[in-house]
Length: 197
Image 1 (tube, helix red, strand yellow):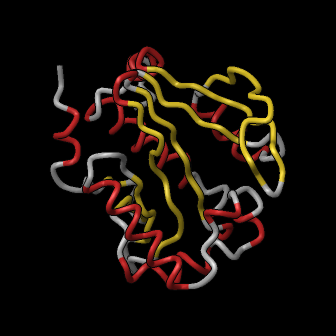
Image 2 (cartoon, rainbow, N blue to C red):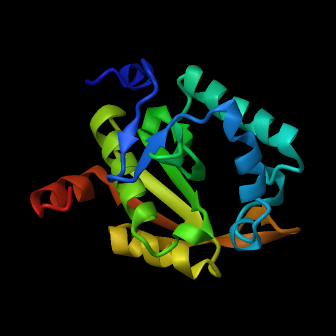
Image 3 (cartoon, rainbow, N blue to C red):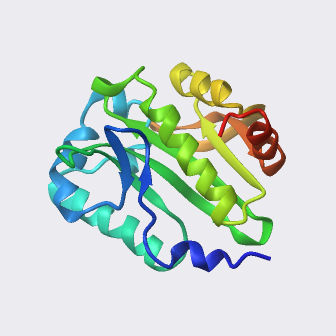
């Protein structure tokens, strides 16, 4: 069996395309990170507890993301422009259940870069890394029903809508129903055969 910890030997930099890259978060991202989560189109689908109140909060969150990687717990990437190294979003994993080889994927991208295929391609690279280097059997995603863009993106990628989790998360001041989507190792291997990777 593959040694999962080898995936955490050094932070994996993943190429999205000629213009964008998935890289480790830097403390210098804090200002852009803070400003990013103040954008209404972004924070309307983010739990309030995850929205930094100031640049110092953002720096603290970035430190936590990097500490989680150092502790071999999970990997979350910054999406950055190659030319400027500017942070424009994030994509990666959380809630890693090693015993069941299961993890959850999450992603956010600046509205200026919506509908350009960047998020789709970022997810593609992150999913590929998960199955090829972390010995995953399943990647899942959750979203509120009102986040139509996220739902459409997951379905376009090949995630299967598996059901509604009633009163599953405390979100925007109340317990909220959450949709769950799944993508398995079998789906990944099928899509490799179909030339999607």
